[in-house]
Amino acid sequence: MNRELGAFLRARRSEVAPQDVGLAGGSRRRVRGLRREELADLAGISVESLPRLEQGRTEQPSASVLESLSRALGLSDAERAHLFDLAAPRPRPRPSGGVRPELARLLERISGAEVPALVTGHRLDVLAWNRLADALFPGLCRPGANLARYNFLHAGDLYADREEVLRATVGQLRLATGRHPGDPALVSLIGELSVHSERFRVLWAGRVVKERISGVKRFRHPVVGELALRYETLDVPGGGGQRLSLLHPEPDGVTEESLRLLASWEA
Image 1 (cartoon, rainbow, N blue to C red):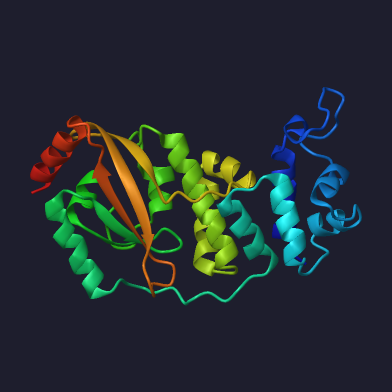
Image 2 (image 1 turned 90 degrees about the vertical axis):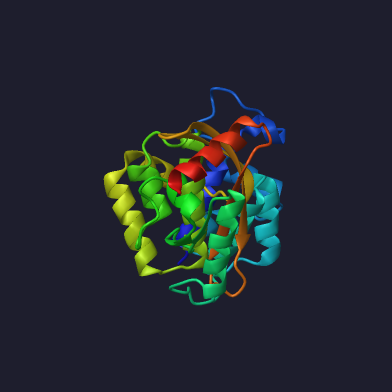
C-alpha cells in the first residue's frame, strides 16, 4: 500500500483553489481545495479510482494517470518528479560516503576566485567544502555536518530569507524520501528535526516539495553584514546523489567587496 502517494495527492488537492481551475468557490464549501470528484473530472479519470489512490489501495497507477493528475493539480517539475517517485520507486545508485579527490581539489582551487563551494549528499550531509564556504556558513563545515540540521537548528539569523531557505530545505528532503525510500539515516534525520523544530514539523506535515537549483540567497553575515549571492547547484556525475553548490556575488559592487573582505578575513 502506498500511503505516501495518497498523502501527497491529498495535500496537493487541498492547495488548489477551485476558482483557479474554473470552478465555483465560496464559503459553503466544506473542504479546503478541490473535492475528489472535481479533481477526478479535471484529470479525466474515474471518480472511483481517486479514493483508492488517496487511501493507498492502488499499488502502481499508470503513467498516463499520473500525468493527468499532475496537469490537473498544476504540479511543478519537482512535484511531478516526486509524484512519479512515490508511485514507482526505482533503484538509485548507492550513495557514496565521500567525494572524489579531484573534486575536493577543485573546491580549493576555486577559493581563489572568491566562490564559496560545497558538496552535499542526498540527505544534505556536508561532504566537502572550500575555505570560503567555511567562512560563509559559521559552524557548518565540520565532519558529520548536515545542512538541514544546520538550517533549522543552528543558523540563527544568518539567512535574510530564512523562511524561503527552510521551505526549500524541507522540499529537498521530501524529494529524497521518494528517491531513496527506506533510507534509515534519512528517516532518523527527519525524526530528529521533527522533535527539535516546530517549524520543521509544520512544513513537513504540509508535504512541501521544492528543488532550488539556482537563484539568489541573501545573508546577514556576522562579519561582513548583508550579502546577496547567486547560487548554482549541479549534480555530481557518478556521485550517487551528490551535488555541488557554487555561490558567487551579484554584480552590484557592494556584495563583491564584502565577499573579498570575507575571503581576506578567512585567510
